[in-house]
Length: 299
Ligand SMILES: [Ca+2]
Ligand SMILES: [Ca+2]
Ligand SMILES: [Ca+2]
Ligand SMILES: [Ca+2]
Image (cartoon, rainbow, N blue to C red; front, side, top):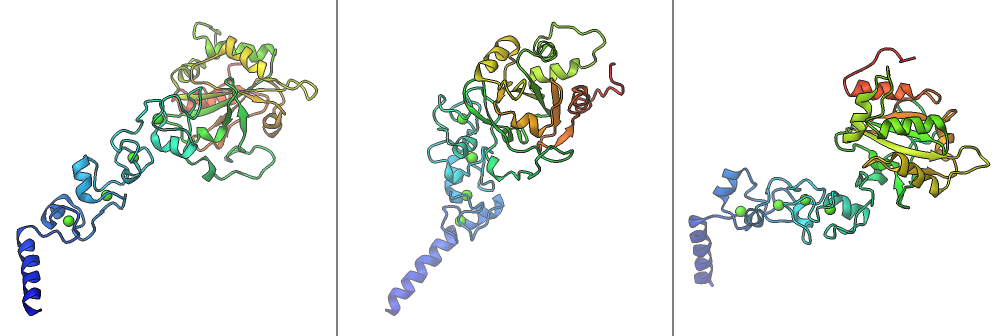
């Protein structure tokens, strides 16, 4: 008994002298200290992969989510911890898992239209107000788009490179709405004296996020899915959804009195610019965000 104990101490001691690995993660204490890891914690960043495994795979042992896609390195068993979008469909792996699409299948995506998607839409606090308010996040609306998919407006929360989110509320067959649709979608369309060109250029490159909402022209005439296709055919812009406010709930919430109406939101989806009858207020705010603020309305 005494002999066995001495032998085991000797082995431990001998191992320790060569390369002590206190936490048994495959890396010596000395190397862990040199790398800034914790020599007594086998998984320094608590992501489910031991420090030694991380060095072997090329992931960062001090960063739980090496590729920043919303999934920890340890959660990426079917995906790639070094590739944030393994199927190259534009939606990061973590967003796909959170929203129920397959991160390894490029035909399985959150939105056919490629609209932004936010992994934690359900965590966003929704105001209880019946009507819009300055500085307040808009209510959560889920509206059908031109591809027939239900789209959650909360997906525009902290959309990348967003200066401002513009919600353009239009009605079918409304001449002023069509004029604005033409101006926003056709960069060859000139309106002398109108100073908002940076806004439509911002929309064209995605720096300013536009969301078109087609709403009922009157209570007795609801907007229908065909109206979305007509608008898309005439004024479609890549990356811009055309959504159906079939029952007029959004128009009523926004107290839209005249169409077109434009509401400006920040990246937290809080109302920063709006006047239910004057679209230029939101366009001016968009200009302000783009660094070209116009001090006077053009009329
Ligand atoms: Ca170790
Ligand atoms: Ca780890
Ligand atoms: Ca990851
Ligand atoms: Ca993807």
